[in-house]
Image (cartoon, rainbow, N blue to C red; front, side, top):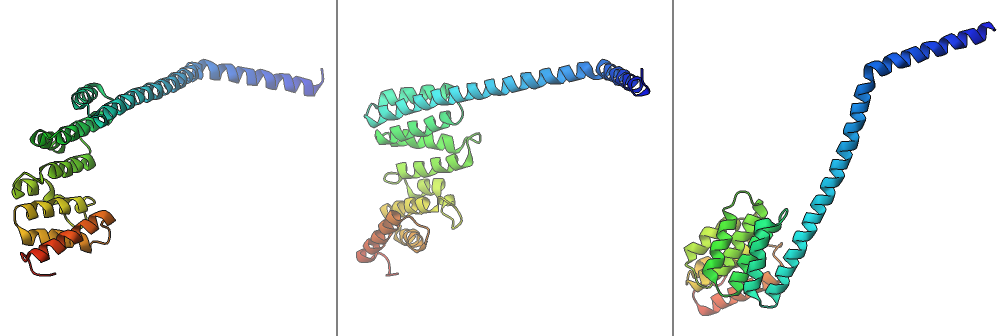
Length: 223
């Protein structure tokens, strides 16, 4: 045997001994880590599959309820929405609450609708954007019947210059002020809408019409 062959055999034995020592020491950790990786991957995939299926099922139920409402089957729509509120997945329960309140409003049950929207806006578990939208929807539901202060209690805080919902809040406040003969307040809110460059076109046009009506009535001075 040559010196080179002997040296190679020694080196191979040393590598084998080192590998065996390493495996004896760290083998269980390596195996455990591999098992955890496999289990974690499987759990993640199962969770994704489960949540996707749950969301799809809730989405299908929500669509059925919307179709019932659009067909004027309000009692059936409310029953479907209440079921979804109880066992829906993700954000579908709160969307079901919002839609159920809208069905009540469309059915002429204004006070019940306002109460439902108020309950959503007071629920701190609901995202702030949806709570604010519930306030707006309550305001629109009550604008033709409630006292000005009742409408203001719900939406006036949303009418500030930096609030993304200011346009709708100002329109509600302006209409409520007009109906209750608070004409200067109505003029102020409609003027704010008209002067805001970010106001949606249709709403801006309605505000200008209301300002013309206010001026023509002689209740306020021309702006």
